[in-house]
Image (cartoon, rainbow, N blue to C red):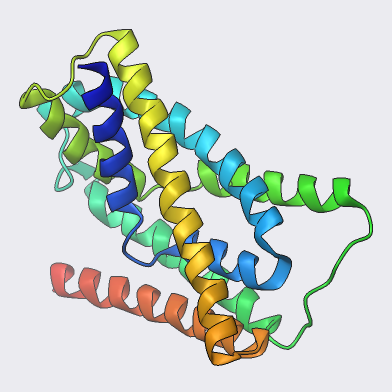
Length: 217
């Protein structure tokens, strides 16, 4: 039973990182600009936050879905709208930063400690600032609990959360590996990659703006 719980955690969270978003695009950019070693530092720190976040959300999921849903209002504003607004802001900020720095050549630091600590800190920050996971676990967490695919005791939720961390690590690693493969296969420069990532982040922000406009009007 615990093995199934662990496997479900891996599969569900890996599935959540398949669609392009700020996290996996950041990993792709990091792989191209700084190399796979820095990607691993980022992934490990990010996954540690993901484990803690998943555990908290799974404990919260059943109660929350009984009283809260994505269409509920917080000060007359839908919870889903608040999450989308935060993601719009994040996409625009990250896209702008990537676009401004698109022509800068990747810098290599002589101090391994500085590079490692920078990637670890980056992973921790994005692990905390990842609100899109809230509606994801509110839905899927409640789904697996109601269908009794996992138990809700502490041990089961810890195993599930660790599996979730492994799932995010695997998905992000494949994104990073795929990004480096594409760059080498087609001889793409970091300028083209950075431009593409920035444009895609702006497109995601535009999509969320249009989506909220349709809902409002």
